[in-house]
Image (cartoon, rainbow, N blue to C red; front, side, top):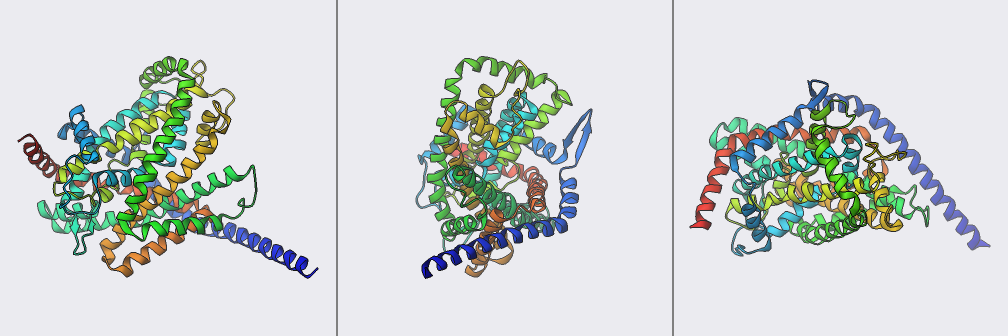
Length: 504
């Protein structure tokens, strides 16, 4: 009898704790959102302000990114099969130099950078794009992905060229360094320091939202969804999932870029291949619909059906999804690429250009095709009675072929979210140490803060915080693209010297 009462008492305590935690989370959500929401909205409205062109609002930040991508594409001339072939050879390790300075291989640098971009957006946000913009938006998304390749090329060259090499063999690179040092070298030291510091501050704040809380929140949501059919134990225990997830994140990020790259070099290729394999099965089963889908993609790219704003609106939607997915122009991925073992900055430029090709042109386009060959009805230019959207629409597309496909899809989402978190932890750390120095105390303090926010992301919604961090991240595009314009001749000189050496 005593044991029975003890068991009941423990159950009562756990139940009371869970209820208190839920009430606390809901109260904190409301309190923080009420405080931050007005500021977040004002700042977001500034960053994403649009220019009215006809009946279409074109966000200035998107136009800024697209113009920069077009400039880099024509100025550097990287879109050739020969350049892509050389990129693949570098990733394979054909030109590796073991004695070169740096911490990780070309392959690990690429996989780490990809882990920061390949994630929930490739699975859920593409469905939103197709829902709003129709098949035509997929065409412009792919075009924007191709244009983004040259932007990544420039960012990665500058990241390696202007990185700091420390006595212990570690390195620190990225836009905060190439903006401050590069602009100081060729233009103005004061402007360089200001722009570099601005970028680093935005990175520290932004990584806690888009690269942390949003990812952990989505990972918990997917875990709760997968386990809902068997048990409801985790339905109200985001804090418990968050603690476990934060512990796993800490195990990886405490070892720095070498530990992060070791994990991402295994997780990202494996999950990408599995995801694409399942997607291709869905497309193969519905192969008879592919001709009609491709016709719809190309025809509606220039004459969309029933979309307010017409052709310009569908172009904006496609380009916006691409830049939001592969982050070309934001400069974030160059932080990971800067850690590569090489003494030739141009080599990592060639590796970096593969990122948008894999992330946007391949994975995002495949996701769109899965949706278009399953739930999209070209006869009515829509989804019939299907009113779901986002990741639920993608899940519906997969399960329309095989009922249990939603399980591997959910696992992929959780693993992509995890890999994104550990990549962005490194990005945020480098922004933090730009101000605080490379001491162990500085690094550990940031890692602790980052892990706390992992738990908060699973427990709280804090929509205002997420909106604010999104705006902060895209604010990085303004100083970064400006830096690419100012330092474009430097990039071109690095390319010219490298090509002369390998063609020598």
